[in-house]
Image (cartoon, rainbow, N blue to C red; front, side):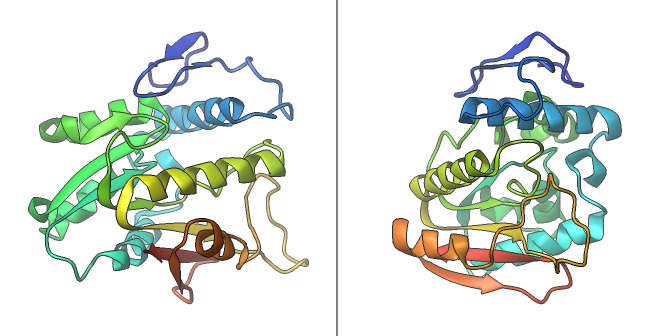
Length: 238
């Protein structure tokens, strides 16, 4: 698909087989996971077309908070020497840049995966020497030591809550299947009733997905909070 989410284009790469058509699904009518993938890919294709390869192009507020999230996620494997890493929902490859600035890129076998082909185009354009490190896919095509997912569950748009949680569950199961040692992800946390929060944001109860990872995925979960953002980071090991 071309950057900008042009209607009628078709994404058929590494397990993506849905039409990215702005009018394919009426608002509020998404009731299956193919619809979730389509709407999400279209949304982020438009973001990267509008803002380019920068934090706002993946719907982040600024680079400092984006990197603060990377710090938390990588606590999963910071004490490890060489390792392989799947970056699920990689966007334009900001995490690859973070690893390069920390002079750790030579020690990390990195693969970035994103549902939006336009994001992968942007990542390959930003990292022309590392084009093979990025793939357009709904899940990782390989098993790595670890996987991380930064912000991929936050914006559910007009998707029904139950359907969105099926998407979260499927993604976590896929990360479990393609990560031999563990994975990490972050979630927004609920705000007080007196605070307005956009309806399209997903803010689950803090313990909901901890219990899922422990019960359904047979994992041990470490929760990180208190780093200045209204969210939590879950480090999942097994």
